Image (cartoon, rainbow, N blue to C red):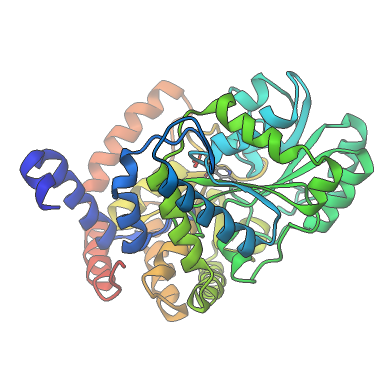
Length: 439
Ligand SMILES: Cc1ncc(COP(=O)(O)O)c(C=O)c1O
């Protein structure tokens, strides 16, 4: 980054600091990962200079022969990897991808049915305040008391509400999804079925989780989570989708441009193509398998320390911990863990009585630390550190009054930043992390 250093030392220094931060801590936010140098080179290439409104061989601007080839490669690789007949690679991220599907398929106020945000669905799956509930009529399903999807209840709701689109695939669900059962429910009520596999794409490609492709009409995914690519997204139509409506590809293409976006980011498309090539390798299969092995090992260790895992465990890359038995709020815990070098996020748990800004749980996972080469043995140590941190701060009770909470968090932060035990753990973690280089 020699040029950057000369032109803008402030941004240069901030990027260097972030590089160091990412190396020195355990990155355990389940939607994050370390992308490869090859992906970053494509992302930082001259392709960022080009305008390519339209699609390969159908552009509004000249000079797109190379951009066409790049986009076609990304499309062909995605088609092969997922086994689908149509892919759009232009959505700038996961939320615009989902928006393009809704605007492409539905009319204003048509009914959609997704998992509630409070139970692990994504904002774009019909949550209040988002475009998905303001432009469409949103009906939301929940998890059962055991923390698992309750397919009978989902079917009942679908029969009652008759949504035009059902969404499966989630943001904070630690268990296997029965896409076949979702397919049967959607077929029964004549709804389109979309699987948003953003979180588990890498696991599906690696063959660790089964693919929704035979059972759903549309698949969306981000490219930057378990897939380990740049930020971006794919929208795919399956054979089943084409059978239901042969115009789906056209509808989605035009929902992206002119519907929602202008020109695609060709550098991002190239980086997605590189990530898809990497994901097709045998080493990626091993990577996907190791993510789950690590996560299961971590879950087992956490249970030994009396952590209450939603649904009792995990089948995938993420774990949701309900901290109420530890007498500590998720926000407070996440902050203390960050000071100690364990980066994860606060998260609501099913039937949470706390508001989203002060939820009762935390969410963590293994995609990024597995990229660094950590294995089951390391999970034992990580669980021990998590337990030590929570032990240090548990019993820190949050004021009931909203205004008081803000002041409380400020003073807790100040204290935690100077807490000797937390800082000691951070030091240990930094030295531990240096043995697992970032790619
Ligand atoms: C299931 C799911 N879909 C969509 C998205 C949105 O992706 P983005 O943040 O790229 O808009 C996320 C992000 O976390 C997600 O978990």
